[in-house]
Structures are given as structure tokens and as C-alpha cells.
Amino acid sequence: MPGGFARAATRVASAIGVAAAAAGVWGSLIERTRWTLRRVEVPVLPPGSQPVRVLHVSDLHMAPWQRSKQDWVAGLAALHPDLVVNTGDNLGHVRGLEGIRRAFAPFAGIPGVFVNGSNDYFGPVLKNPFSYFGGPSVNLARAAQLDIDALHGFFGELGWADIDNRATSLDVRGTHFEFFGVDDPHKGYDRLDLITAAIDDLRSDDPLGDDVWPDPATVPHPRPTVTVGVTHAPYQRVLNSFVTHGAQLMLAGHTHGGQVCVPGYGALVTNCDIPRTQVKGLSLWRHGLRSAYLHVSAGLGTSIYAPIRFACPPEATLLTLTAARATRTTTGRVVGAA
Image (cartoon, rainbow, N blue to C red; front, side):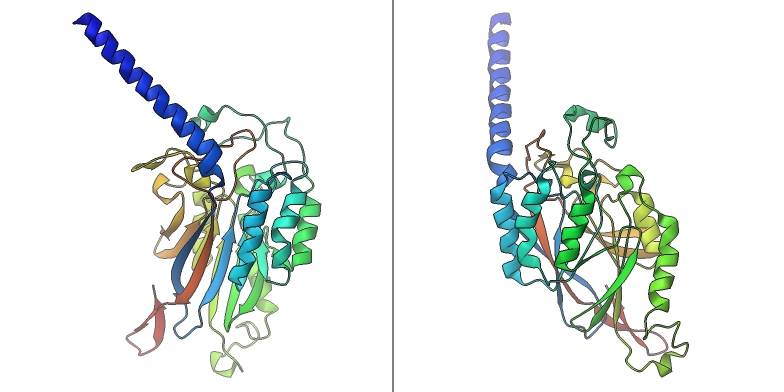
């Protein structure tokens, strides 16, 4: 009996080893480059608005030799999005900008906004993957500094607006969008204290804003408006502040969707303090008496030192913003309802 038990234990251990090896091969050689486009509908626009197609890209962690990823991202321009939102961590190598230029060149002229991730400032370093179970990762002193100014210059050539601790506005298909964002919260570069002033300045410069036309009845061309908050890392302090500042939609990346997930269970880690159940995809974020839609991208890349994904393919998302269902208040005013 003891010998039979030992043989059975050996067979189980061997089976586990084979399964682990197969999972490693799948995750590193197949799933890591199984580029996926997700399509999501978000009913966030004012009633009667035309749909707006937003391409959300994040966490490319680009190296110059990653031609498959570059070609796939470039091909997304054929979707003809109305707007691009880039939530950071574009670079994954000191020459990563070469690949970023190749990937995003076809998007020139399509309006967009972007924020920084830590890997737009610093290059990747070899880390113990099990350290993520102890909490969010830290950047090490030996990380190479990347040319973030050149990255910003290229995005400026595309026509994309930098909203790191800033705000801007765009008119897209008849809807007025207010965007505000923060620099990378994972590095502590977010300045939530600047958001209020940024939004106030944005609205005071708006010729159709309330600051210029105190009486809504006198506004010559009232526009439906949607407020969007953008961050690289979806830390709770940032999301709560965004909701407090009136965001109706929030976009983030950073988590890689967990990167290595367990089928039927999901992500094991989030690399921030967001709940594991909201590590990727569309959900509703509540703070106080308010709520906003939250979309977290699982991203398109990995560190070159951890080139594996499992049960979490690399992704970009085409968000189709649609009109919310109209409801009528007790005063008879029609408003949007999610």
C-alpha cells in the first residue's frame, strides 16, 4: 500500500508538472501575442446623442522588435474611431518609441488624450514575480530613464492632448467632452489637488460654459456634455476623486487584467488597491452617493522580463458610447439614466 501510494503521488506530481509546463508554453508563446479587440457599449451620453466610438489602448510596453504587436495596433485605425484614449505604459525598452511610432502613425489626425504610466518614465527591470502578492510593485533605482519628452512630442504630432494633472475638452459627433486626468498614481505623481482648478479653468475658457452664461436660458447653443476621468493606475483614491469631480466615465489600465489568471476565478493580483473583481473590463464605481462607469483595460503588453499571459489575452477595447435611457424627473425635465 505505501508503495502504491508513492507511485500514485509520483504520477500526480508528474501530471501537475506537465500541466504547468504546458501552461507556461501556452502563456509565453501563444496567448501573449493573441491580440484581442473587445467591443463594449457604454450608455453614458445624454439622450438623443449620436454614438461615439472610443478606442482605449493601454500598457503596450513596446520594444522595437515587437512587429506583430505594432502591426496589429496600426490595423486598429481601420476601425475609424472617433477618439483615442491612451492610458499609459507605452514604452518597454529604451528604444520603445521606434515601435510606438510605427504602431500609432496611422492614427494621425484622429483626436485623442493620454496620461503617463510609470513605464513611460522608467524602463523594465527583472523582478521576482511572486513579489506582486505582497502588494503593488515598486520601481527600482537601477531602472533606466526613458525619453518621455520624445514620446509626448510624437503624441503631440498625432494631435493627442496631454492630460497629466490637466484638463481639456473636445467636441465629438455633437457631444461636448470634458477630460481630466492625472499623472501616474503608481509612482505618486498624481496631483488630485490640481483637478478642481484645472476643471474650473477649462470651463471659464469655454465660450458656451456656465461661467460665461450664468443664465442657462441665454446660452446660444447648449450642448450635451460628458465628463471623463483618465488615469493609468486605478487606485481607489483617484477613482473616488474622479467621481467627486463629476466624472461619468473613467478609463484606466496598469493592472494587465491580472496578467496570469486562473480560469473560473480570475486575477490573482491587481498591482494596486482596486478590488480584484474590477481588475479589467467595464464596471460601475460608486463613491458616496455618486457613481460612474469604469473601464479598465487589460492592456497589450508585458514586461520583456515577464513575457507571459495566461487566461488574460492582450487587448484593446472599442467603447461605443451611446445615449443613456431617458427618464423624467418630478418637474418634467428629461435627464439621462444609466
